[in-house]
Image 1 (cartoon, one colour):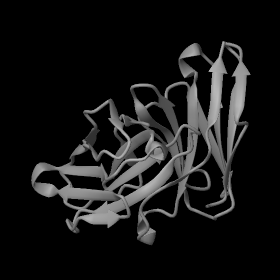
Image 2 (spheres, rainbow over the protein chains, first blue to last red):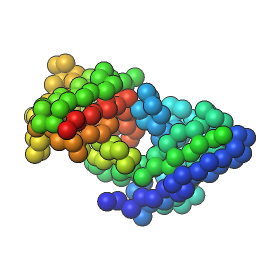
Image 3 (tube, chains in turn yellow, cyan):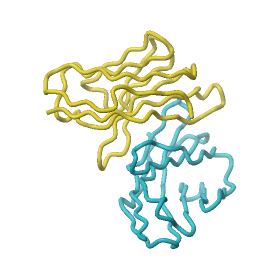
Image 4 (cartoon, one colour):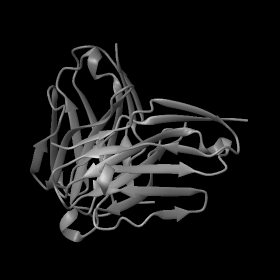
Length: 115
Length: 113
């Protein structure tokens, strides 16, 4: 399996507090993504990155920010957590289409509960 | 805009039965990729298959087979002789080469012993 790890694996936090989730890869893949998974919605793209310091918004980016200061790390921050952000968060990596290799490898997920 | 529809929210079959999971996609692009991912109860997402839009040949991998039909914009997944270990949520997905993958909402498959 590709080297991709998410931390923490589980977190409970209080409404209004900031939360940062980390995705770390050892594959030197160019693209990194954050998705959230909710019942009845499948996986929805929050933000993605196509290189260091290059990020863009996905379908459900409100309330989230990201940073990528190094190829291997992609951080997702909830500036002020709300109960609607209770979800399972998945990070994914890919080489990118220009490599001819389409498709993702996913991390194991982070289960976040906002109380 | 792209869209993936998995109309079957949940399916239950008895072990050893065959089961087909439906996937219908929408895109105006002529070049695209289709995917299936499996999410077992443990929660990880496991890549199953990727097909490009120029290859309509059906694929078989053991008990799994995929039927890609551009005429109906469908990419259906069949499990033959289902087993309890096949119980999972299955996601169909689409990429139109913008390096983002759009997922369907998933089909939860229960294989009953």
